[in-house]
Length: 382
Image 1 (cartoon, rainbow, N blue to C red):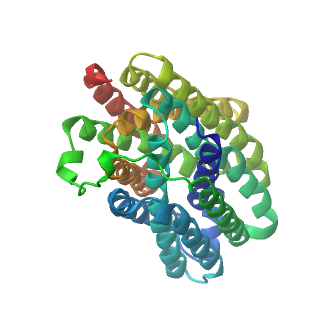
Image 2: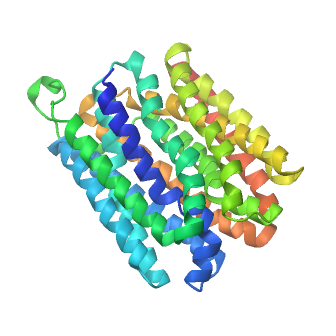
C-alpha cells in the first residue's frame, strides 16, 4: 500500500471538499453579506458543482493522454488562487464567478487523485486504499465544517476561504513529493487514445447512475444540515460545532468501514444496496421528526454513516477498468457526482421554499431507493 501517496491524497480531498462544504454553515451569513436570498446563495454551491463536473469530464480523459501529474500539482495551486479571490470578492456575482472557477480547479484534481491511487494498488486493495483516500472528504466534515463554523465566528466566511486556500497549497506540495516515481508501465508502453464509447459500458452507466443517487443524498445532508439545525433549534455558528462534529464522525467511520467491506465481502453491489436502503429509512425521521437536538444529531450520524459506507464500494467497482480508460471513467464519475450535488443544491433550495425541510424526507428516501434498486439489479456483476 503506497501510504505516503494515500496520506497526500487524503489531504488533497480534505482541501477539495472544504472548498465547497466549508460554506455550508455560512449560507445565512453570506446571503446577508451579499444582500441576496438564501435560495440564491445556495445556488453558489450548484454553480460550483456544475463546473466541478464539467472540468472532471475533461481532466479525467486528458490525464489518460498526457499524464496525471500536471493536474495533481497544478489543480491545488489554482484552487488556492480561486479561494483567496472568493474571499476578496465584494458582490454576489463575483463570489459566484470565483466559486465556479474553484469548482473547475477541484474538478481537475478529484478524478486524477483517485486514478493515481487506483493505478498503484491491486483490485483486492482498492476498497481500503480508496476508503482512506476518501476519508479526507470525511475529515473535511469532521474537522473542516465544525472548525469553519468555530473559526468563522471570529473571522467570517471570507477568512475561512483564505484558510482553505492555504490547505490547497499544502496539498499541492504533498502531490509534488509523492508522485515523483512514475506508475509501473501500462498498456505495453503505449497510450491508447481515449474512447468515451469504450468507457461507457452498460456496467459503467449503471454505476454512474447509482453515483448520482448516492451523491444526491449525501449532498442534501452536507449542504443543508447546518441550516436545518439553525432553523429547527436556533443554534449560533459556534453552537453548530458539536452536532456537526458528530455528523461528520459518522461520515468518516462510514467511509473507512465501507472500504473494509468493499474488499472483504464477496459482492460490492449488495453492500452498496444495503447501505443505501438504511440511508433512505433514516431520512424519514431525520427530517420529519424534531425530537430534540440529541435525537436529531444521532439521526444525522446514522444517515451520513449509511451514505458513506456505500461510497468506497462504488468507487472500487468503478476503478476496476483498464488503466488506459480509468481516468476517463473516474472523470465521468465525478461529473455524475456533480449532477447529484447540483440536484441537491438547486432542488433542495426549491423544496425548502415550497415545503420546508420536511420536503427533504421523501426526496432523500426516493433517491436512496433508486440507488438500492440499481445496485440490486447489477449485483451479479458486483
